[in-house]
Image (cartoon, rainbow, N blue to C red; front, side, top):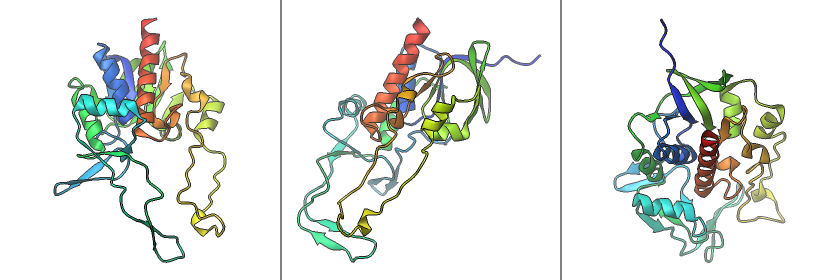
Length: 267
């Protein structure tokens, strides 16, 4: 006789900052939680490597004074930080011109960094979870609605959940995770850019800005609403309505998803 699939209150897909925040909040609330992470490590795009006594950030790096939730996590986890050095002159380089030295620093604003790298934020959150909550190296391949629950199939197991939080970028979820029923057409469309326009300002003779960035698509209203009759929720810095693309946005998205899920579970 086949063994019944374990049933969880909430399954979180992705152990980046948003996923870890949501998992921590729900775990502390006494719910039965499982968090799946495809990689063999936590942190997602917050990843650091150590060289001797130095930590090099290869992804998320900074936080700013107007990001209170990250600062609160730093304090709660007891993480060491230091100010980003901005004194001195800046080096400016284009694809066609030789590097030139600019007097002063016209680019950077005062910001903070983590002494042990940005991954220390993820490691600190993961360390507070109960044993067995995290499943590393086990990517989720499909989410299916069945008998009022969500069947979660990963590389190593099949479980059931009352709610699921998708804590990976929506475009990645749409590409790598099979949904039954399929994602609504408007959600799938919102997850993928319809057109990509690239402008290399370094080659624009009459502009040459110090930086060019776009936050297009962040905080889309479709990702503020759950799917699957209120059982599948979104959480990543891409869906944050504020501070999209920042660690602060990832924290806020994780909190929002956890609160939304917890409210539905208790209603």
